[in-house]
Image (cartoon, rainbow, N blue to C red):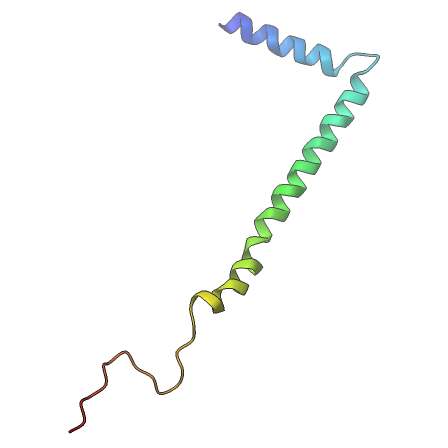
Length: 75
């Protein structure tokens, strides 16, 4: 198993450090990682405004003077 892992690491190093196309491959990998990082950072900030905009519709405000007690009977 260790030999197989070492062979995979060696193949990846040869792929990215190839004298002909390695620079282009490394740059593309860098761009993909940067893009993924920006998307993750952007999606982490998006739900907060959305949830704060939904809150008033989900949790209605109680009007002043209202209570949860049942009305008292009037005789």
